[in-house]
Image (cartoon, rainbow, N blue to C red; front, top):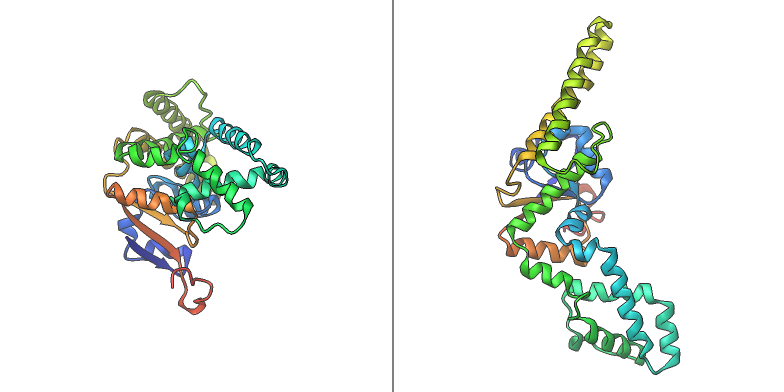
Amino acid sequence: MKVYTYVNPFSINKAEYWDEIRELPQLCISQTLVQGMISCYGRTSFTVISTVQSFLNEFYKEWENSPENDIAQYVELSDQIDKIQDENIKKSMKFNKKEMVEALKYCIELGLEPDKFKVLNEEQKEFINIYKKIKNNAVWNKLDLSVSTEREDDLNEALKELIIKEINKDKELNINKNQTTVEERRKVLEYKIDELKAKNNKTKKKTALRKSSTDRKLNNKINKYKHFIELNEKENLIKEKKIVLHGIHQFTPIIWKMMKHLKDLGIEVIFLINYDRNYKKIYNTWE
């Protein structure tokens, strides 16, 4: 594990570690940070650049991004609550069912064992009893199953899926749902590049200043789509066995689980954080 810091987000590319990290998969804490990095340094500076949550949705899809499994968990919890004898506790748990699902998922993500809890009251006893009963059931052990079975190839596929979704969501490309292969995406990208080049040629009659501005915007788009072609056909996105986590100052259970999983897969995690020694209280997570 490494921790790299910067004070000015607009000059990260001047840091001595920039060449090491810029082509590594970079998972940011928010979409705002993703957009800021792309706006400042250009999309061609990065391979995979996405939010941590988007990555989790792909890597732990059945746990993080499965409405069907979410419903099944909710139903199973409801069945367990209905079996509670104490009517007051049953009523309370029914009222707080959503929060109970979240609490149970947190317990699983943290790897907590039911027998290790210190129980203080009857309501807590019922919660622990439910946790014991559901913990190893199919709809609740999806995360542990992913951690125990997913390997480096699965990690690479999750990163590939982020690239595919980024290309598919580009409104200017207008890719339809039926264009799902590498070849089909490449043809769309090549067509768009040719279209932009033709448009670029038409700007030659503009004034020098306006032409320069227009040329720059068009060339940036052309370069981005050329970069998309390369990424679309790239086989190994985790070749260096390193991943950058950018902007994480608080660790949720699922992020902590992911970090340990990556370590077990032999992937080095590099933390990239905004840090100013003059404001230590703000950055005390890292102190």
